[in-house]
Length: 337
Image 1: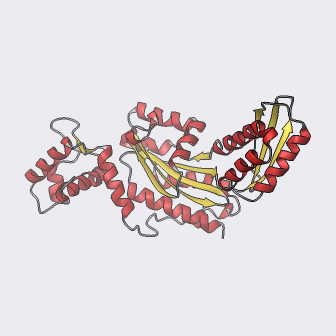
Image 2 (image 1 turned 30 degrees about the horizontal axis):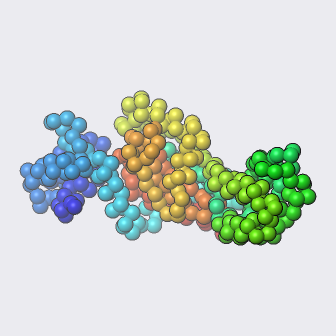
Image 3 (image 1 turned 90 degrees about the vertical axis):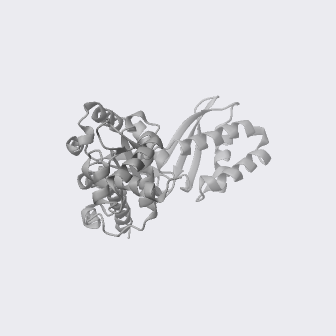
C-alpha cells in the first residue's frame, strides 16, 4: 500500500515522463510538482518506489522512468476522474458527415482521423454482437453425413458452416428442424434462445437428438467465431516518436498491424464490455505489444459493437487519448440520429 506522498511521486514521474520522454530526476519532481518536499526526500521515495516495482532506473546516474505498474496506477486515476467534454479539440461530426449512413465507412475514416489527431495508430472495428437477433437458420443436406448450416443475423449478416452429422437425415427432416428452430428463435438473441433449443432437443426430437446437438454446437461456434472487421490508420507518424527509434520495436508493431486476424482477435478480447479499456505493455498477451499500449472504447451501434482504439507507446498521453476516443464514439452515435 502506497503512502499519499509515494502516490504523488509516482503520478508526477508518469506525467513528466509522458510530457518529456526523458528519465525524471528527484530535483525535477521537487521543483515542478511536489514543491513542499526537498529533492533529497523525493530521491528517497523514488528509491523505495523502485524497490516496489513502480519505477526503474535505466542506469546509475539517470533519473527514473515509470514501469507498467506505474502507468496502470496513473491510467486508473484518469479513468476515475470526470473528463471535460470537448477536450479532444476536434469537430468529429463534421468530419464524418459524408458517411452518415455507412457505419463501416465512418469507422474507416475515424481510424485515419485518430491517427492524425493523436500521432499514434488509430484502430476501428465493427464486431457483430452475440446479442444480435437471429433472423433465420437453415440446413442444407450435402450428403449422407454432412449438412450446411446457414445463419442469418439481424441486418442481413450471413454465416455458414459445414457440420458432420452422426446419422443420415433427409432434407425433409432438416427442413423440419429448421422450421422448429426458427419458430423458437426468430427475432430473439442467441443468449435468449440457447436454453429454449436445448429443451427442444431433449423433449421433442429425441430420435434426432444427436444430430440436433451437432447443429446446436455449430450455431454456437458460428456466433462465437464471428471476428470483428478491423480498420487501421497509418503508422508513418509513429516514426517521429523517440519510443520507436528502435527499429525492432517498429517492425514488431508493423507486423501486428499486418496480421489482420491476430489484430482482430486482440481487439475482440479487449472490448467485450462497453466503456474504455486500457491494456499497457506486459499486460497484453501479444508479444508485439510488450512495448506498446492499447486504449479501446466501444459502444453498441445498429446491432453491432463499434470499437475505436489507439495503439501507441507505453508513454502515450493516456488522458488525451481517452478523451478523444470518447468524443469519437459520441460522434458516431450522432451520425445515427
